[in-house]
Length: 317
Image 1 (spheres, helix red, strand yellow):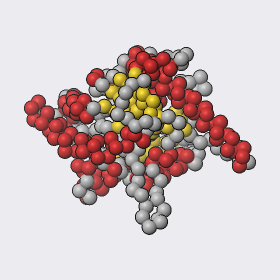
Image 2: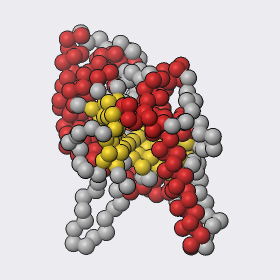
Image 3: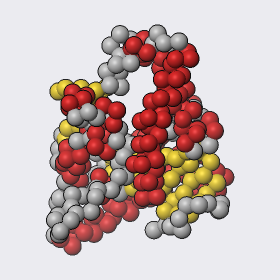
Image 4: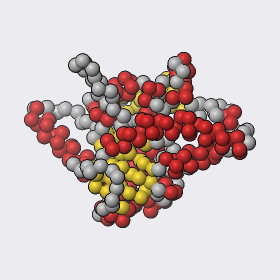
């Protein structure tokens, strides 16, 4: 156990302490698969998967099994044992460039390879952003990723339908290439056993209602388990700028890219522009909206240099 400034409800593990909780959980990913699942600027090794993600996979297997038993007990009590299954929903939050996407993909593959072979789906909340046209009309293009830039009602409706066990629920798709929601393009989520929902602000609470009015539910009200990927803001800044500079030489070269005009910037100008985006948009969003939700998570993965997870904080039940 480590000393930490996190609140009392968490048990804190260093890498060795957490790795020991893997028990006999088998490694089902190969080194090449781990590389393929990694974001191109998020370094992760098969050793990291064994140390951090296999124990987490074991914990989630125990939690899912316990939740299924609780659901069955409730159904027996209500005389509704023929009801449809309710997906186990995992929320995954954290800053831009912190490595959420890699963590979500690694988890999805590990969970889908349990001996029970559950059906595991993954969505990102990017698809629930308002379109660029709507954001531009409201003067919110530089607030993309802030809570007000999302269609919260659509996201809540989607999660409500998922938890109701509905078939073929549609989630809108987002393209990072064109930097916009794709019209008439959807991902179909059809009653998975487990759904991972990844996004910047998925742990954000709603404002409290006034004068006895009914409050809308939080997105996190639909989560059975939640994970926050954490790191020092200076590290995240460096990862963000490094990613921007690499994209400048890769994705930005595509004429269809929203950021194509930045592909020809000099290195000095590109660094200055990336810094401006960070300090003007992403850092305020992290400080004001994302980081304050960290301590609402069931589990916190804290990264050090090279995206290496140094500590794991597990909320006490």
